[in-house]
Amino acid sequence: TNLVEHRLIECAFGDRTMQVEFTAGPDSVTVRETFDAEDTNSEEMQRTGWQAILDNFKKHVESKAR
Image (cartoon, rainbow, N blue to C red):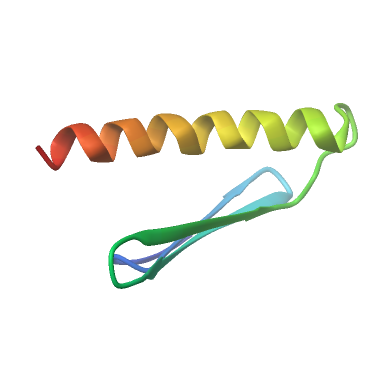
């Protein structure tokens, strides 16, 4: 739903939303993901799933940087 290059990704899926913010530091980039939780799975299970997505994204980005 919104994209700001090198800074922000926002999307909607159904009635839920998700934001990924990228903040540059001197030697790294901090990635913060915020999402609307759903009612079916526990918050911890959802957090683990979203973290796995971020971990895969990290691997992808690092493979392109070489």
